[in-house]
Length: 150
Image (cartoon, rainbow, N blue to C red):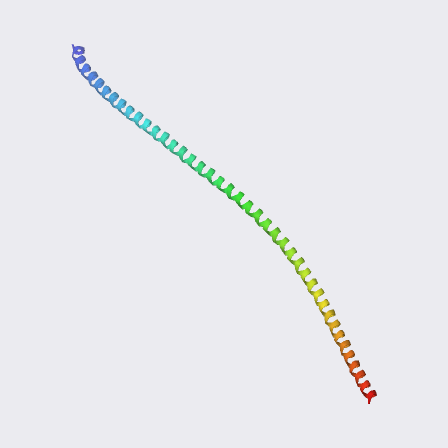
């Protein structure tokens, strides 16, 4: 009958549908595998980028640490230089005071020597005057004797 004739067509149609479904399933499985592979590759790339970023971060942190150490060393060096400058300024001020005292002593000594020199010159002039007076008196006495002898 008619149902017996329909069954092979139906079988053929079902077989075609099954074939198409299996093809679709194979395609879907292939696409799924491709997508999983792409996802794994993407995850691996992200992990690699994360590792690279960590390495770069560590490099930056190490560079910052080195720079901080350099800055601290420079700061200590600057502090030492400031201390040396202050010490030298203190020594210089001490030397200025000492020099001023020495100059004062020299002025006082020069004044004293000039005063002694003036007194000595005055005494010498006075002695010369007295000597001259004695010579004049001797000359007068000799002349008086000569006059008296005549």
